[in-house]
Length: 253
Image 1 (spheres, one colour):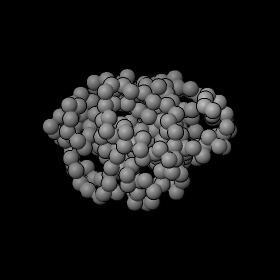
Image 2 (cartoon, rainbow, N blue to C red):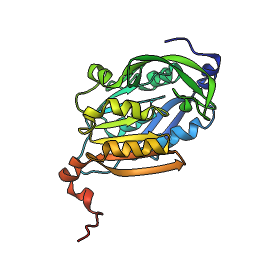
Image 3 (spheres, rainbow, N blue to C red):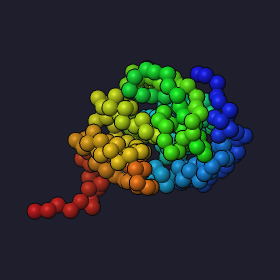
Image 4 (cartoon, rainbow, N blue to C red):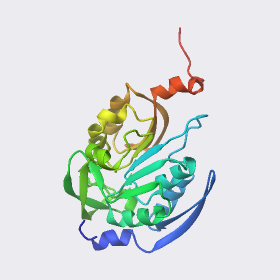
Protein backbone atom coordinates (compact mmCIF):
# COMPACT_ATOMS: atom_id res chain seq x y z
CA UNK A 1 0.00 0.00 0.00
CA UNK A 2 1.19 3.49 -0.74
CA UNK A 3 1.23 6.04 2.05
CA UNK A 4 -1.80 8.21 2.58
CA UNK A 5 -2.14 11.62 0.99
CA UNK A 6 -2.41 14.58 3.38
CA UNK A 7 -6.11 14.84 2.52
CA UNK A 8 -6.66 11.16 3.31
CA UNK A 9 -4.92 11.53 6.66
CA UNK A 10 -7.15 14.49 7.52
CA UNK A 11 -10.29 12.39 6.98
CA UNK A 12 -9.04 9.83 9.50
CA UNK A 13 -7.63 12.19 12.10
CA UNK A 14 -7.51 11.77 15.86
CA UNK A 15 -9.64 8.82 17.05
CA UNK A 16 -12.81 9.53 19.00
CA UNK A 17 -14.45 6.91 21.20
CA UNK A 18 -18.21 6.39 21.30
CA UNK A 19 -20.37 3.86 23.13
CA UNK A 20 -23.70 3.01 21.54
CA UNK A 21 -26.54 1.04 23.12
CA UNK A 22 -27.26 -1.62 20.54
CA UNK A 23 -29.77 -4.40 21.05
CA UNK A 24 -28.08 -7.01 23.23
CA UNK A 25 -25.69 -4.56 24.86
CA UNK A 26 -23.31 -1.68 24.36
CA UNK A 27 -20.74 -1.38 21.59
CA UNK A 28 -17.72 0.88 22.01
CA UNK A 29 -16.09 2.00 18.79
CA UNK A 30 -13.26 4.27 17.70
CA UNK A 31 -14.01 6.49 14.73
CA UNK A 32 -12.82 9.72 13.06
CA UNK A 33 -15.26 12.44 14.13
CA UNK A 34 -15.31 14.29 10.80
CA UNK A 35 -18.25 15.24 8.60
CA UNK A 36 -21.32 13.23 9.55
CA UNK A 37 -19.39 10.06 10.39
CA UNK A 38 -20.77 10.01 13.95
CA UNK A 39 -24.38 9.85 12.73
CA UNK A 40 -23.60 7.11 10.21
CA UNK A 41 -21.79 4.99 12.79
CA UNK A 42 -24.67 5.40 15.24
CA UNK A 43 -27.17 4.28 12.58
CA UNK A 44 -25.13 1.17 11.80
CA UNK A 45 -24.56 0.18 15.43
CA UNK A 46 -28.23 0.60 16.35
CA UNK A 47 -29.45 -1.50 13.42
CA UNK A 48 -31.09 1.33 11.49
CA UNK A 49 -29.02 0.85 8.34
CA UNK A 50 -28.71 -2.96 8.46
CA UNK A 51 -31.63 -4.24 10.48
CA UNK A 52 -31.64 -7.92 11.42
CA UNK A 53 -34.75 -9.78 10.38
CA UNK A 54 -36.06 -11.77 13.38
CA UNK A 55 -36.17 -15.40 12.25
CA UNK A 56 -36.90 -17.73 15.15
CA UNK A 57 -34.37 -20.56 15.20
CA UNK A 58 -32.07 -19.06 12.58
CA UNK A 59 -28.43 -18.37 13.35
CA UNK A 60 -25.64 -17.15 11.11
CA UNK A 61 -22.33 -18.99 11.20
CA UNK A 62 -20.33 -17.00 8.64
CA UNK A 63 -20.38 -13.30 7.75
CA UNK A 64 -18.43 -11.51 5.02
CA UNK A 65 -18.13 -7.71 5.07
CA UNK A 66 -16.84 -6.20 1.82
CA UNK A 67 -16.15 -2.53 2.32
CA UNK A 68 -15.91 -2.86 6.09
CA UNK A 69 -14.63 0.70 6.68
CA UNK A 70 -14.06 1.16 10.44
CA UNK A 71 -15.93 -2.05 11.33
CA UNK A 72 -19.39 -0.84 12.33
CA UNK A 73 -21.29 -3.58 10.49
CA UNK A 74 -18.94 -6.30 11.75
CA UNK A 75 -19.29 -5.12 15.35
CA UNK A 76 -23.08 -4.94 15.11
CA UNK A 77 -23.40 -8.39 13.53
CA UNK A 78 -20.98 -9.84 16.07
CA UNK A 79 -23.38 -8.72 18.77
CA UNK A 80 -26.35 -10.28 16.97
CA UNK A 81 -24.51 -13.52 16.11
CA UNK A 82 -21.64 -13.79 18.62
CA UNK A 83 -20.58 -17.28 17.51
CA UNK A 84 -20.33 -16.40 13.82
CA UNK A 85 -17.01 -16.06 12.04
CA UNK A 86 -16.74 -12.65 10.33
CA UNK A 87 -14.25 -11.87 7.54
CA UNK A 88 -13.76 -8.18 6.66
CA UNK A 89 -12.14 -6.52 3.65
CA UNK A 90 -11.16 -2.84 3.57
CA UNK A 91 -8.69 -1.18 1.15
CA UNK A 92 -8.47 2.31 2.68
CA UNK A 93 -5.37 2.66 4.91
CA UNK A 94 -7.09 5.17 7.17
CA UNK A 95 -10.28 3.16 7.59
CA UNK A 96 -8.38 -0.09 8.03
CA UNK A 97 -6.43 1.33 10.98
CA UNK A 98 -9.75 1.87 12.78
CA UNK A 99 -11.11 -1.50 11.65
CA UNK A 100 -8.06 -3.31 13.02
CA UNK A 101 -8.23 -1.44 16.33
CA UNK A 102 -11.99 -1.93 16.74
CA UNK A 103 -11.83 -5.69 16.13
CA UNK A 104 -8.46 -6.65 17.61
CA UNK A 105 -9.97 -8.14 20.78
CA UNK A 106 -12.70 -10.11 18.98
CA UNK A 107 -11.10 -13.40 17.89
CA UNK A 108 -13.84 -14.42 15.45
CA UNK A 109 -13.49 -11.22 13.37
CA UNK A 110 -10.65 -11.20 10.84
CA UNK A 111 -9.71 -8.01 8.99
CA UNK A 112 -7.89 -7.99 5.65
CA UNK A 113 -6.25 -4.82 4.29
CA UNK A 114 -7.54 -5.44 0.77
CA UNK A 115 -10.26 -4.24 -1.53
CA UNK A 116 -12.26 -6.71 -3.64
CA UNK A 117 -13.04 -6.09 -7.29
CA UNK A 118 -13.63 -7.84 -10.62
CA UNK A 119 -9.89 -8.44 -11.11
CA UNK A 120 -6.53 -8.03 -9.40
CA UNK A 121 -5.47 -4.41 -9.71
CA UNK A 122 -3.86 -1.31 -8.24
CA UNK A 123 -6.28 1.64 -8.40
CA UNK A 124 -6.76 5.08 -6.91
CA UNK A 125 -9.22 5.21 -4.04
CA UNK A 126 -10.50 8.76 -4.14
CA UNK A 127 -10.90 10.51 -0.81
CA UNK A 128 -14.38 11.35 0.39
CA UNK A 129 -15.29 15.01 0.04
CA UNK A 130 -16.17 15.36 3.72
CA UNK A 131 -15.54 12.01 5.44
CA UNK A 132 -13.96 8.62 4.88
CA UNK A 133 -17.23 6.76 4.37
CA UNK A 134 -17.44 8.40 0.94
CA UNK A 135 -14.10 7.10 -0.36
CA UNK A 136 -14.59 5.48 -3.76
CA UNK A 137 -12.79 3.98 -6.74
CA UNK A 138 -14.94 6.29 -8.88
CA UNK A 139 -14.85 10.09 -8.92
CA UNK A 140 -18.20 11.67 -8.02
CA UNK A 141 -19.81 14.63 -6.29
CA UNK A 142 -18.94 12.95 -2.98
CA UNK A 143 -15.21 12.56 -3.63
CA UNK A 144 -12.27 14.92 -3.84
CA UNK A 145 -9.49 14.87 -6.42
CA UNK A 146 -6.93 13.41 -4.02
CA UNK A 147 -6.60 9.77 -3.17
CA UNK A 148 -4.47 6.78 -2.32
CA UNK A 149 -3.36 3.85 -4.47
CA UNK A 150 -4.85 0.65 -3.05
CA UNK A 151 -4.54 -3.05 -3.77
CA UNK A 152 -7.60 -4.86 -5.10
CA UNK A 153 -8.11 -8.60 -5.43
CA UNK A 154 -10.37 -10.63 -7.66
CA UNK A 155 -13.35 -11.09 -5.33
CA UNK A 156 -14.01 -14.80 -5.85
CA UNK A 157 -10.36 -15.81 -5.62
CA UNK A 158 -9.91 -13.71 -2.48
CA UNK A 159 -12.88 -15.41 -0.81
CA UNK A 160 -11.53 -18.80 -1.81
CA UNK A 161 -8.30 -17.87 -0.05
CA UNK A 162 -9.55 -15.96 2.99
CA UNK A 163 -13.27 -16.54 3.28
CA UNK A 164 -15.63 -19.33 4.32
CA UNK A 165 -17.01 -21.79 1.77
CA UNK A 166 -20.55 -20.93 2.82
CA UNK A 167 -21.66 -17.39 3.59
CA UNK A 168 -24.61 -16.83 5.92
CA UNK A 169 -24.60 -13.03 5.62
CA UNK A 170 -22.88 -10.97 2.93
CA UNK A 171 -22.63 -7.19 3.08
CA UNK A 172 -21.26 -5.14 0.17
CA UNK A 173 -20.92 -1.37 0.46
CA UNK A 174 -18.12 -0.21 -1.83
CA UNK A 175 -19.30 3.20 -3.03
CA UNK A 176 -20.13 2.22 -6.59
CA UNK A 177 -18.09 -0.98 -7.07
CA UNK A 178 -20.91 -3.30 -5.97
CA UNK A 179 -21.78 -4.69 -9.42
CA UNK A 180 -18.21 -5.54 -10.47
CA UNK A 181 -17.83 -7.43 -7.19
CA UNK A 182 -21.22 -9.16 -7.28
CA UNK A 183 -20.79 -10.22 -10.90
CA UNK A 184 -17.52 -11.87 -9.94
CA UNK A 185 -19.22 -13.64 -7.02
CA UNK A 186 -22.29 -14.68 -9.02
CA UNK A 187 -21.38 -18.37 -8.84
CA UNK A 188 -21.85 -18.41 -5.05
CA UNK A 189 -24.58 -15.80 -4.45
CA UNK A 190 -27.38 -18.35 -4.76
CA UNK A 191 -26.16 -20.09 -1.61
CA UNK A 192 -25.91 -16.93 0.54
CA UNK A 193 -28.66 -16.72 3.17
CA UNK A 194 -28.86 -12.94 3.43
CA UNK A 195 -27.32 -10.11 1.44
CA UNK A 196 -27.09 -6.44 2.43
CA UNK A 197 -26.20 -4.09 -0.43
CA UNK A 198 -25.85 -0.36 -0.80
CA UNK A 199 -26.47 0.81 -4.35
CA UNK A 200 -25.15 4.03 -5.86
CA UNK A 201 -27.19 4.42 -9.05
CA UNK A 202 -30.66 3.45 -10.22
CA UNK A 203 -29.04 1.35 -12.94
CA UNK A 204 -27.07 -0.60 -10.33
CA UNK A 205 -30.20 -1.13 -8.25
CA UNK A 206 -32.00 -2.68 -11.20
CA UNK A 207 -29.01 -4.81 -12.17
CA UNK A 208 -28.68 -6.09 -8.60
CA UNK A 209 -32.36 -7.04 -8.56
CA UNK A 210 -31.93 -8.89 -11.86
CA UNK A 211 -28.85 -10.71 -10.58
CA UNK A 212 -30.71 -11.97 -7.48
CA UNK A 213 -34.25 -12.40 -8.82
CA UNK A 214 -34.06 -16.20 -9.17
CA UNK A 215 -32.60 -16.91 -5.73
CA UNK A 216 -33.60 -14.10 -3.33
CA UNK A 217 -36.53 -11.94 -2.28
CA UNK A 218 -36.39 -8.38 -1.02
CA UNK A 219 -36.68 -8.34 2.78
CA UNK A 220 -35.97 -4.67 3.45
CA UNK A 221 -35.18 -1.49 1.55
CA UNK A 222 -34.33 2.11 2.29
CA UNK A 223 -34.02 4.71 -0.46
CA UNK A 224 -32.06 7.56 1.12
CA UNK A 225 -32.09 9.71 -2.02
CA UNK A 226 -32.30 9.34 -5.77
CA UNK A 227 -29.57 6.83 -6.79
CA UNK A 228 -28.79 5.91 -3.20
CA UNK A 229 -30.18 3.29 -0.86
CA UNK A 230 -29.69 0.00 0.99
CA UNK A 231 -31.44 -3.27 0.15
CA UNK A 232 -31.63 -6.46 2.20
CA UNK A 233 -32.21 -9.72 0.29
CA UNK A 234 -33.31 -13.05 1.76
CA UNK A 235 -32.62 -16.41 0.13
CA UNK A 236 -35.80 -18.13 -1.07
CA UNK A 237 -34.63 -21.32 0.64
CA UNK A 238 -35.19 -19.59 3.98
CA UNK A 239 -38.83 -19.00 3.04
CA UNK A 240 -39.25 -22.77 2.81
CA UNK A 241 -37.25 -23.48 5.95
CA UNK A 242 -39.09 -20.81 7.97
CA UNK A 243 -42.69 -20.63 6.66
CA UNK A 244 -43.63 -17.84 9.08
CA UNK A 245 -41.66 -15.49 6.81
CA UNK A 246 -44.52 -15.82 4.30
CA UNK A 247 -47.24 -14.69 6.70
CA UNK A 248 -47.77 -11.34 4.94
CA UNK A 249 -47.94 -12.81 1.45
CA UNK A 250 -51.27 -12.23 -0.31
CA UNK A 251 -51.97 -15.00 -2.81
CA UNK A 252 -54.23 -14.02 -5.69
CA UNK A 253 -56.53 -16.73 -7.00
